[in-house]
Length: 71
Image 1: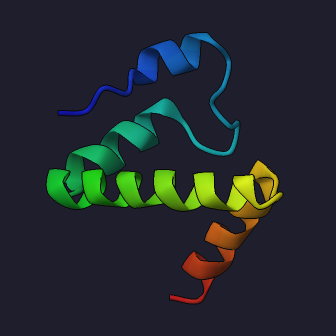
Image 2: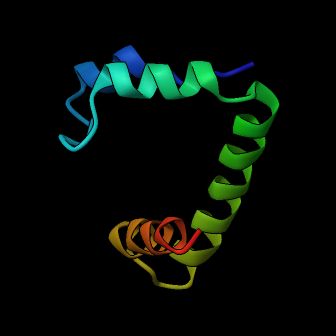
């Protein structure tokens, strides 16, 4: 189902300091698995397309924050 290993991600020091492991776990537990997997797949596709067009990861993160702020 989900092949992302959050504990490995944490061990590699890649977790943004703005969110805790516990918050991520709780959010994922509360989300519909199907909706979350769809969201991740779409983000993967869009991010890849945008990065291929020259956008930086930080640009994409800022854009996602902008979208969430405007919900």
